[in-house]
Length: 190
Image 1: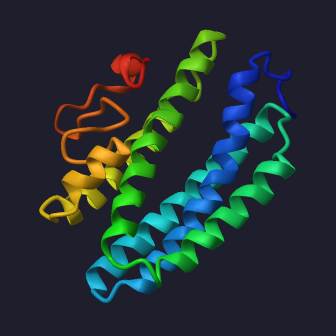
Image 2: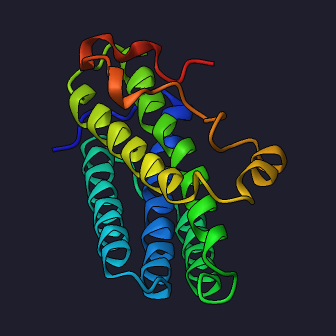
Image 3: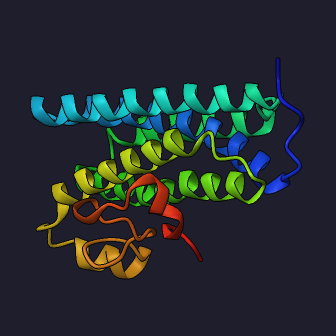
């Protein structure tokens, strides 16, 4: 039985958006995996796709718990976006799918830490672990894509144009010095 509705419009919207955006990401990774030649890269990107489908399922479970229905608008919008990105991976070369996947994942890290902060702000702590784990998994994805392009000569230009790369991230998570769940409240604070 669902709990009472969340009295937090930003959290409700963020859950709906994350749910739909995970589908877009999974579709994009289908095209990305199909476009690379290396079996190792192909397998790694397919695993990231699976992670995105798992995140979608976990976000839906949270939404169900609070009686939140998916947004038809977000579902349509992100379905189209994901399919377009999936197709474009076959025509835009090798670097850009890696770059923009890393950039996207960098921002996704904060979606989950922001959800955790929003839940905590209304006294709900029961979802801390799952949201923390999803945020950390997104950071692992970001690091994977960045490692794939860190020596590419285009990275400095793209970093300057799109504000993400070797020296810039959209989050402050450091996988080598991770805070435990209970101390992760400072991640992604603006």
